[in-house]
Amino acid sequence: MENQELKFKTNLNCGGCVSKVQADLDNAVGISNWNVDISNADKILTVTVNGITEKEIIAIITSKGFKAESFG
Image (cartoon, rainbow, N blue to C red):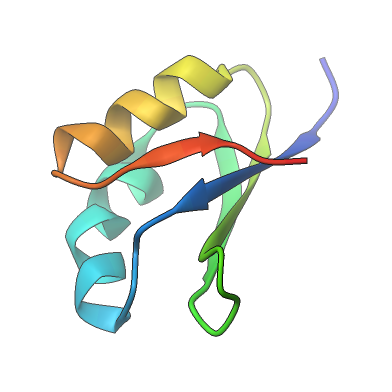
């Protein structure tokens, strides 16, 4: 399976919010890279994946008390 880029609309508003999900995203099997554009009104989380599903990524974000939904 090759790398795929997924985008999510989130409510990760600041660096503090991002730091709360950082360890989980960094350690998740199947994520090779990720970034949150907190300057974008939709707070877009972009994830380069190889074997993890959209639902699993959304579960990681929501488990930390934030919202995420597929975008684009």
